[in-house]
Structures are given as structure tokens and as C-alpha cells.
Length: 235
Image (cartoon, rainbow, N blue to C red; front, side, top):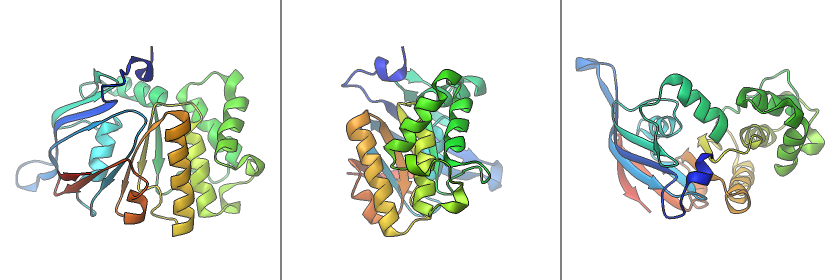
């Protein structure tokens, strides 16, 4: 049973309780997060907003099992994951999560098709499903006709949509996106956000993204504001 099946409709998909993250020691210690708590239901588009250094990237990394809190607990699908070993965290991300970054992270010499298929290989999807999953994901983001193009032959918006296709191809429960529109103009950014909204509304995915752009926040179901490592507002 995967995390989505385990999730009761009244329970949060992702939950953080008193999460603190400290980098370094002694006088050189940096408190990136200070007791952050939040509860995120399934099938929602959530934005974490804040200035650079506010702690939003650290928080999304911890929610996505890329990092562990110094203190506090994190739950996913009702299971506490903050104490998972590295191998268990890797397995969780491969199976139930998709990651998207502002720099796109595509392999330059691979075509759009090959980039998405590469993500399926990492996720451990059976090879018999590579073609159907890859083509389906690229079609979903409107790029099936461009599947043989390499990143340098695409616009920034198209490259980010390939990155989204790679993140959703294995059908994860949760998508985590760190400043996914930061490198895009407003038109391309809006295009990407419409894809995110569609994934939530029609595919039942949950998306957590970081941003400082008010236009992007308008697409979110809920917005958490971070300042100096603390959640100072939630709307």
C-alpha cells in the first residue's frame, strides 16, 4: 500500500512538528529553521514564501526527505520519516516523490524523451513501462511533439515542462519544486503554474513549492510565509 492509499481524507499528507535545522556548531552555528510546524492535506498546491535566507528551501528539503531536522518530526502519509535511514529516504523519494528545481536539471546531451526515461530508470520503474510512461508525461505537459529535441533546442519554459514531465512520469504522490519559475519570464511562469494546478485538480497530486513571486502565490491553495526560519503567517 503506497502513501496515497494509506492517506485518510481527514489526515494530512505531509506534517512537520517543531522542525529546527541547525548548520554548524558553536559560534558558527546557523539556525536555518526554528521550530517550524505545518500540516498539508493531500491534493493541494502549497506555496512557501519568503526572502532568500528565510528557511524555505531548507524546509522543502526536509519535507522531501533530502535532509533531516536537527530537532522535530516530519510525517509523510502518516509515517514518521525524519528518522529514516538514508537508504529508506532514497527509496521514499524514488517511489512517492518528484523533485523539480529552478535550474531545470536536464542532461544537456539527452533528448526530452531520454531525460524523462532516465528519471524512470532512477525511480526503479519496470522497463516495460518506459515508453508509455515517458510519452504520457510529455504529452501531459504539451511536449510530445518535441520529445526528440535536446534542451538547447528548447525555450526555458519548455525545459521546465520537460523537468515536470520527468518528475511526474512515475506517478508520485508528492511534487516538491524549489523556485520552479525563478528562471522564467511571467508568461512562461504562468504556463508552468497552470500545469501544476492541473496536476492537482486532475491527477490528485500534492505540490509544495517555494517562491517569492506574488503572481505565483495567487495559484496556491495555501501560502506559508517564512521569516528567519520561522513560519510567521499562513493563509
